[in-house]
Image (tube, rainbow over all chains, first blue to last red; front, side, top):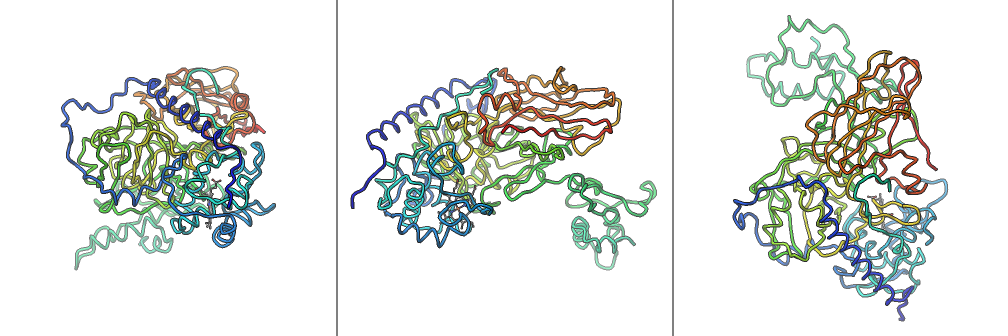
Length: 207
Length: 428
């Protein structure tokens, strides 16, 4: 099956690269800009090189807990999924709280946020289509804590399929798109271009 | 005597007292507490009018015997509040708010500390607790709670505040309703830098991921500028953390938005980029004109008058206006109060010592002439930042503000009859 991504991947890689540079600049900037220099913390002059408390963590222990996924795809597991399988899972495991097809029902208050919107920034509700900057976040979040009543119960293939279903419903990927560790980080989210890092550092200006 | 009455009232405090009484009973002898225990508690009934929503007043019923003629209960294993005092948090589905109007100074009693969690309060066995630090380190390590407590410890007073702290919309709102998602404690733990020294962090590292062990496996990316002051806290106001505040250990980032202070922390991954978790992308971000602002870590300076406030009533004459001010960017240098609806401003007195990133008490003596007016406060921090009005915030950010990092000046209306009402503001 042909895999199609909305937008061109070259452009996407550039965007990621610029994003990272910006973020790293911010981090180093932040360092210099700490205002309250009176803060000293601990005086370590008489400390030994190591206290010897704690122990080395084994590779197995680390892999058991190391579930975070970065925007560049680091951490994504093997496996795959698509929207068709996701639709079935969604109806079964998610619709009760997030609404049929993830949409708000007029006059009815869902116990959980709606998950489908169009891709225009100012539209409501603010969700995946118009407000999420990274597709990897969706996988990471759902695997860690959804369904709310049974967190940690989804298999990796199920999470790929649900991610595909929700990205498809928000018109970000085509219905036949196969999501896996290679394709997911290449999906460009419509809201990505809207996000800016807070650059306020105090001072008189209201921003 | 009154003991039976108390049991009928099914007063929780009294039940506790009775349990202690049983334990202290020596066979063949009636303890003094069996006779007297709960006499006071029994004299308290809950007020069930709508007013009770705001003030849980203890109403004495029946005669309370002359305390100079009555020997009181003896020593006990656990202290508790006077049966006349009923400060309570105000819970909703998502959070529970601190009764700011009931506090006389800046340490929040631990059982009144605000709550916000994303999948309920985790129950963690301290004997099984471990903190993993890995990623860009020379030696990935695990620390038990006992390990954490062996390291050089550190204690600091600072506030915590949810980034979504601010409600408005109606006049019948208390300080708790408006700004109850902030509290202050004296925290004790091991400084994160002490642990990072132990694992050996790569020079190239610039972000870390903090992960909780609750059912939301809460995660936030923390840039290096936050590491120096970070504490892995296991103590709160001298005792172990409360479960709602992350027992047995949490991340504490003084002055930073509440959500980054990951509770029930179990994992720290050292990295060279942010992870872009849900809580730092789709949540805790906010529209600013035609952009979305992310990574607002420091809480902006703000203040609130806690007395007089709704639903209190004031009398014409001298009133000491009181409140708290705080900033995530260092110290509060000044609080100004207006008693004429913002036309003129005067400096309030700050309670010393003024601490870094801490609730700071302010007081301002005012003689009220009995006329309609509005009283307001605004905080100024050491960076020169002046707490803005809602209008200024809307002008700077647009009308689609969202609910995060909103720190407008708030106002109480004083009516001629002495009633005090919150002044709701609309920005749409």
